[in-house]
Image (tube, rainbow, N blue to C red; front, side, top):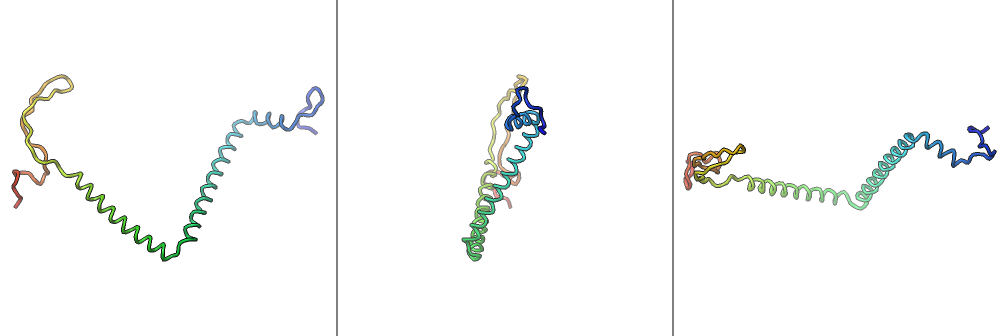
Length: 136
């Protein structure tokens, strides 16, 4: 017994027409199934690639080689970290202490205000020391 009545001309409905009709009625379900299938397929592909890479690394490397490489990698990392720390310290050095001359400044509202001379730069450790003086 067919699930749908036969067309008026008496010929049976093709499977393709039935599938197309069903897909049009359940468009949201079809989209969800496609999205889930794509996600699961991508996850499986990632796991397979990860497994193959892991197998290749362990297959071709001896335990001694892996340990030796790990030691070199740690030494390189320590050296790179020390260099990065030194670079960061160099960048954070305060500017040389200097005097700024008297000048005027125009504010956002259009007012012009005088700025008296002041000292700028140096670090808080240099407070009270003139140029060329050394802390005791």
